[in-house]
Image 1 (tube, one colour):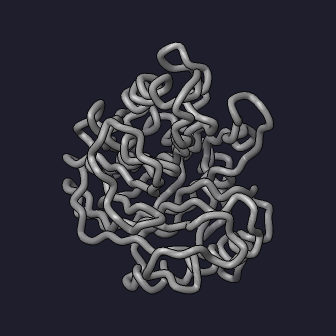
Image 2 (cartoon, helix red, strand yellow):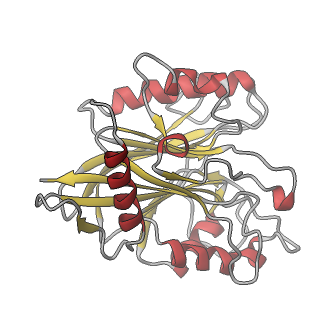
Image 3 (tube, rainbow, N blue to C red):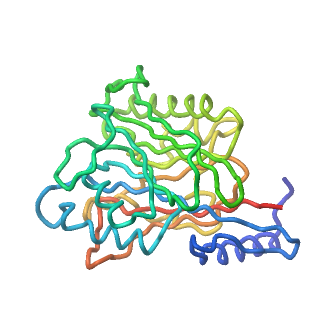
Length: 306
């Protein structure tokens, strides 16, 4: 790739501003007079936080705010963490335009449709069903036995990764979405879990299609956990936070309902897509300053159709 000039950078910045101002209902825009069309893909990561069951941080107190945030942002895909069955039910009841897939991390069962409290978490992926076709999907556990429920290495909990193989209805672009939640205390579990995710990505994506990886990784991007993903030769993936043309790179995502604060939620990408923006969604919705103990983050990407 040639050296980027100031003229090239200004052109890319203008493209980023134009595309990120578009809604998903109008995802394409001619950009350079050549007849090429740039399509946008908006990918969100969001730890919805397990239901506290009572008080201002319970799901009952937050669900309208979460619904309002999704209405406002309307991402093409949402990778969620800590999603319980009743939280999933709530999200799709407010937003029937989304389909979803996920597996409970302890039992391996599909989360039920319920409005009652449901304990088990899933790494659920949501997508706009009128925009995307699903070609394949699956879940694996971050352990030495990835095909069955189990706890890996020094992890506190069973941890999983969920993936979906998508095709864009309008253009035919095929890509993979992976979503995960690394352990909160086990450093070996995070390190080995990331190695396993990379191995599974290579095993699943045999044709080298674009890929996205979202999640609550319980560590910052500078941590050695990410060395094989971001700092290999060549790197497996890139960070949207670090590489997007427009980025909230200094904003935190974990807020813990006001303190402490850290950058542990990330969006990574691979393939022939351009990272236009990375945004931390830290606004108030439906009167709630904190809709979860994590702020959602959304990255917008473009790819070119000739």
